[in-house]
Image 1 (cartoon, rainbow, N blue to C red):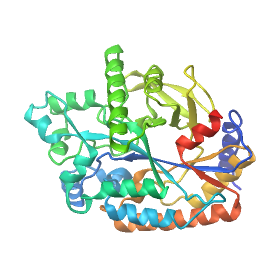
Image 2: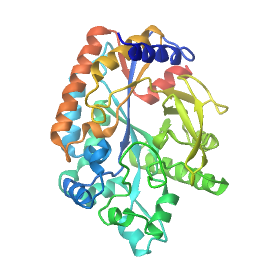
Image 3: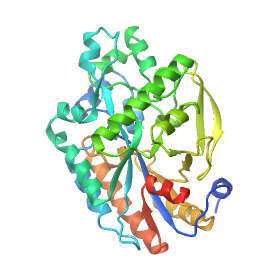
Length: 376
C-alpha cells in the first residue's frame, strides 16, 4: 500500500469520525444533473470541436446529455437485478433540474430577458429517442429504483450567462445558437463557466436565488406529485442564508460533499469553505448528507472504481456510517457514446455484486429515506 493511498484512507477515517451513527449498513446512490441539458448531440459536439473549442477535454461535454428511454431501460435492468435483505432494489436518488433555458425566447428578446422551459418540454423539443423518456421516470419511481429529488430550477448562473450573452463574450453566442449554455473544459468554476447556479454577489442576488428555489420546488411538486425532502446545490455552491428558504419549502436534508462553497463574490469567483458531516444539523434542524464515496468512471476511467468504492464501504461501515455514493448522470447516458454507457453499466453491475458479497446485510435507501432514519 503506497503512501498516497494510506493518506487517502486516513483522511476518509477522519472525515467519517463525527456525526450520526448506525449499526445498519446503509447504501445510498446520489446522482446529479437529471433533467438539465448539456451536449445536445454528437453533431453539435463535432461543430464545437471544429470551431476550435476543446470540449473533448471534459467528460461532461463528451458524454452528458438528457436521458433517452433506452438509457433508463438499460439502467433499470441493472438495478432491478439486485435486492437487499429487505427485498429492495438499489435506488438512484435522481437529483433533478426542473428547467432549461428557452433559447428561442431569449434570442427574441435580443438577450435582454431570461426565459426557461420545463425539462419535459425540452425532451419534446429534442424529439426522436427522447420522446416518451419521461414515462421512464415514472416507471423508475414505480419500480423503486429511481427517486427524484431537487437539484435546482436550473443548473445555470443566469446573471453571469445573460451578461456574457448581452456582451457577446467569446464563443458564448456560438454555443447558444447550438443549444449549449456552458463551454467549460475542466471542472474549475471560472468567469466563463455558468454551471454554479447559486453563486451570488449581493443581497439582490440572494433574493433572486430564494425566488428561483421556491419556484423550482413548486415545479418539482407539480411534476412528481410529492415535495422534495432533500436538495443538492449545483457545484456544491450555496449561501447558508438560502437554507431557511429551503426549509420553509419542505427541504429537510442537504446533500453535498465534505465542503460547502459559500459565495463571497460571484464576479470574482471567490468562496469561503465550510465543512460538513452526515447528521450535522443547521439552525433550522436540516440534516447534511455528506457523500463519502464516488463512482465516476466517465470522468476518470483509469481509476479502479469498484475497488475504491469497496474500500470506502469498509471504512464507512467500520465507522458505523452510511455509504453515500456520488455518481453523476453522465455515467449512464448513451446518446453521445453508447459504448461508454454500456461499459459503465457493466461496472455498476460488478460493483453491486461485490458490495453484496462483501456486505450481504446491506440495505439500499434513497436520500429522503436516509433523512427519515436520521431524524427518528
